[in-house]
Length: 184
Image (cartoon, rainbow, N blue to C red):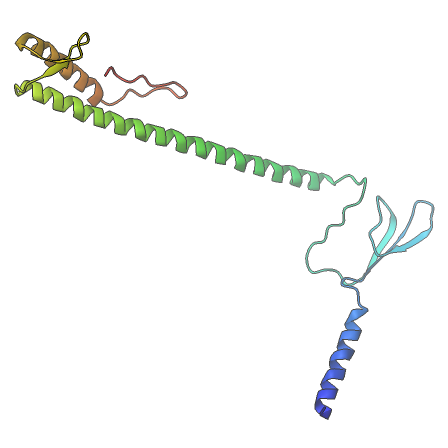
């Protein structure tokens, strides 16, 4: 091996050995406890203490060390409650959005069906007015029976009534109520 490679390898080994012994955030907490004894630890003390000092590097970001049995400060509790309220409000808005989407889809489907039935009713009324042959099924025999002039007039009046009911705009229904479809 060349001398250059040996020097690079030694410098890498030296740098790694120096960093191995260093803790990530070497904080030392020093305080006086309730009995007046001086305490030193790498962890923050529990509860209220006198003369707390922290020595060493501090992390760049916020670090939270939960203390068993500790009561959160008023500001922290309020902040946690605010976050919970925000999450609940978000979930509530999502549910409302889904319900509104479902109602809109139902309304669109009803409008499409109404338009289709309107077209069918108008076409049937035009056929009767034009004098086309109209038939009806006999309920007893199941055979088609052609309508005479009197029956055609009655059927035309009924077809126009049906077309009017399907083609007019549906009444605005109050929220939560179900809409009744016109007769078929």
